[in-house]
Length: 78
Image (cartoon, rainbow, N blue to C red; front, top):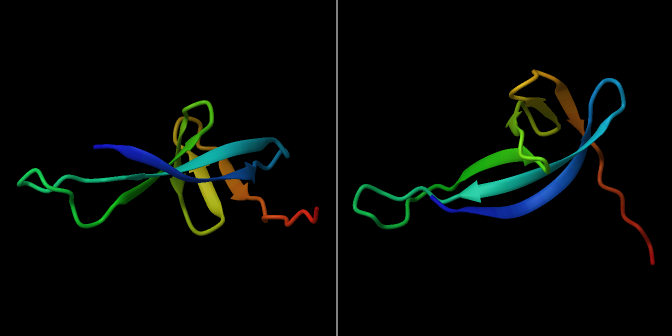
């Protein structure tokens, strides 16, 4: 199974700490060795801790159970 980084974003916990979350898509091989049909999306902190998605903007750290809220994306004009 190969994982490809497809995105990243910041999320904040209840105390205001900011975490960098990376979004990966993993290809799942089929039984005959060919590429599977549906990629699996997984989330990890930049330091490698696993993150589970609860809904579009809510996540939870697997190891500690800390809930994270996705920060809204900001457009910076140049």
